[in-house]
Amino acid sequence: MKTDIYERVTNKIIADLEQGELTWLKPWSSGNLEGKITKPLRHNGVPYNGINILMLWGAAVESGYLSPFWMTFKQAKELGAHVKKGERGNLVVYANTITKTEEQDDSSEEERKIPFMKGYSVFNVEQIEGLPEHYYATPEPVIDPATRIDHAEEFFGHVGADIRHGGNSAHYAGGSDHVQMPIFESFRSPEAYYATLAHELTHWTKHKSRLDREFGRKRWGDEGYAREELVAELGAAFLCADLELTPEPGTDHAAYIQSWLKVLKDDKRAIFNAASHAQRAADFLHGCQPMVEADSKEEVAA
Image (cartoon, rainbow, N blue to C red):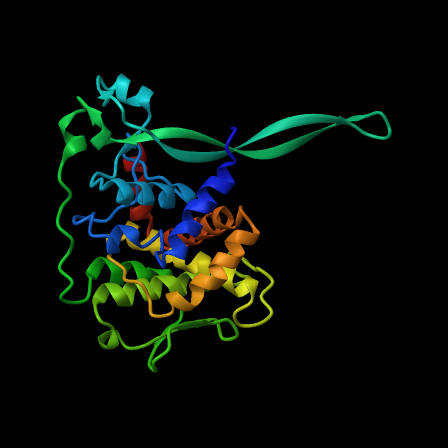
């Protein structure tokens, strides 16, 4: 594509960070999405993953869309609908490869796969007329935050991590391989507790026995530290969307923003890399759940 996709997406998130806003928390802090929080959905109900979640969340907030559904011009037409005149699409991306044959020194030929990123436009259903009625349904209300949230308790309980409670610090201790959390009652809301736990469990997935994720961190606050924190931030946001929770910005976000800005400005692919690692972490934690969850996901995908 003429426009560098990596640069275009990175510049949008940098602009948000420079305003002190976190793209991945905007759907909850903006006030635009008052109903159930969910990942952006394709026309068939299958969620988008990775960097596309951030891009479509940001687009929804910018335009005030309440619906999570997105589709291409062609998909709308196949459903007997049409995109409203003058509406502009929003970019989503996918990875692909091309195969190049190269001649070796011994005159033999070797095939090499070269990865690249492609993009295409999708429209929110609020930009489309004539779709079946279920696409325009109003989201259900957000769950009552008055007490512990059973399905979140069940989800995190199945992960099998060593989670300890006490003190005033939330962190993952790599040496002892445990997650330390303040007691539940010390949080402002149940959602704040579960969002923090999701963040720390995303860190927990980096252990060598799990996803073996390493960014070369040498000390607190260096580039490797900033990259891992960005992965944990996105992983927590993805999990909160899956669990229909409403996270809140943490008190340490302001301190991280400058380090994230440096990473993103130095490497236009950093946010794509972080989103990919975050998606793998979220998928790993989903993989810890009983098979009944996996079966229900297959039904949705079908």
